[in-house]
Length: 131
Image (cartoon, rainbow, N blue to C red; front, top):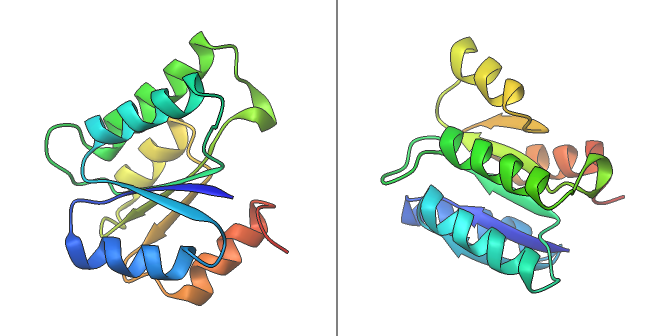
């Protein structure tokens, strides 16, 4: 599995990378703009991501903006349905406004920090990424 971890907080990046590295190769972006660039490069290079873990509160481009831009890029490339990358929002924001906004922007899952390895594994199972 090819994974992109998008997180501006160093400790959160480390934790997610530790949890996810046993499932596949992990790349890191520190903001939404970097994430969008990495996503486009991967698609154009023929090695798309299977999973993106996307924080909401980040500098330059936040998670909501990045999610929307990723889905727009997929649409431009005629990537639809099950071909789309699975996106899990990983954030400290557990309020209904942010959760609803993320699902309207077509994320597949939303995890509120602190994220445990068990919660993350369960989400990966629900998304069909692991057994």
